[in-house]
Length: 384
Ligand code: ADP
Ligand code: MG
Image (spheres, rainbow, N blue to C red):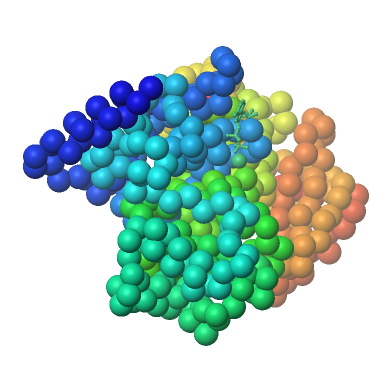
């Protein structure tokens, strides 16, 4: 059992002049799979993560996010695959020998120690003392803006302040990789959105590369430079927050991120410049103003965000991309309302209406006959 790690470490230290590491591939997750008694929790995941980025693993409960994160930290050993950080293969190394720090949801601060002592603890264990220790602790205190509270014990701090201490302690040794598992889990909603921005600021200032796990799409969208959407151990899509929102790769991602109208149909015309989709819900085919990779007769879904749908009493011009229906429900959200429009087919289309506009909502109310419509490039055709 000890042989493999020793060999691995040894081989690493003997590599004389390692080639420069591509900052675009600072952390490489190569075909990582994790099985528990034959159950596949992480299914052959490959990802390249950039130096200094905040990368989010986003998915529902049980999708394998924490297991993948624990593989990065060394708390789980992948069944197969490889993890390489800054040119170093991590897999043979136990957690404490990795240049990686994991901040746990419970923070695990030492209750009997002050803020300063909590931050100093790991540094002292590494043999730091005197001026060097004081300087590093001071640097961390100012990074998380807690210098004034250095003498307090954890129970004398708010939840947000405790989180900042935990973050300072995680960053004190200058890890190459910071791992966060549901970092806001212990905070209430209002504090959470403030801490999301504070954490991003601190992480960016420190320059550390960060992989975080969350089930909360808003949190991922707010904090991350890129997001991997996970389901059943699989990466469904990797992209910047707006890419994932505007160009979801498949039905799962479209449905998981935000609210969406998903309309099933088949490709009618497949042209280089446009496609049309025949559905059982709209009188005329849906016209999409760009080509896709598909074929005529292919079953697809048309994904349309509610904020892209117009609603009005007048019939819009044009043949395509409109339908008549009945307002079945109106949900008020302050800045906007969501109209639930039932089509004759039985399908329902959600349409957002901004309440802050100068005009009112055309006097549209329950049971009104209305038209829903959208522009040629406002929806996405999903083949997966
Ligand atoms: P997530 O963090 O996305 O909620 P996890 O990575 O914690 O998901 O879990 C993924 C799947 O792997 C779940 O079905 C979970 O029950 C299973 N799993 C996780 N850890 C273990 C373990 N130590 N033994 C057996 N099954 C596990
Ligand atoms: Mg988890």
